[in-house]
Amino acid sequence: MPSVNSIRHWIQSNESLLQLLGSLSLMLFIFTLVALVFIVITLPEDYFTRDHRESSSLSQLHPLPWKIVALLKNLLGGLFILIGIALLILPGQGALTILLGLTMTNFPGKYRLERFIVSRPTISKTLNQIRRRAHKAPLQLPAAKRLLNSRLDRS
Image 1 (spheres, rainbow, N blue to C red):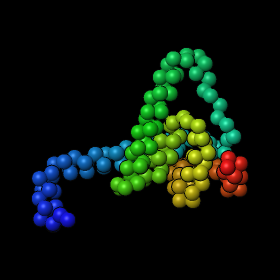
Image 2 (cartoon, rainbow, N blue to C red):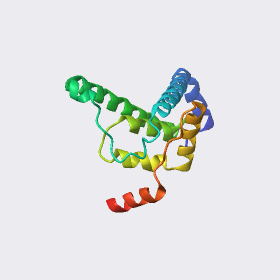
Image 3 (cartoon, rainbow, N blue to C red):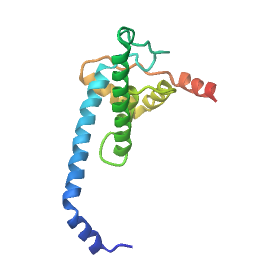
Image 4 (cartoon, helix red, strand yellow):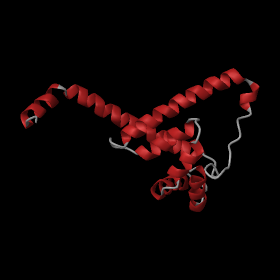
């Protein structure tokens, strides 16, 4: 087991690394909060209650640029998910950042997972507080009974 002196020595010898990691953590925290607020404000109020999502009309006009945009959006969403996982341990809004990343990515079961996360009272309350401050209508949330039935149907 390391002694207090060896830990103190390691901290002193890696002070610049710790400052860099602290600064990076702070910048990621601020960036995810700004991105989170922007996306929560721009979400349609019925985003979580729609049965299916229609594909963008832009995807039919120019498929190649749309595929590139979709790839970049998925990569950015994946980055937010990873940052959110890190923020579960570090200071920050980990669950909300993961939800932000999920809204940006495309994968099977995405909508069911989003609905499950947003149905948590603390998450839905925080999202609607953000929207209220921006003078937006609150998000319509899926009924708990409907969520339970969709989980039972999948079993």
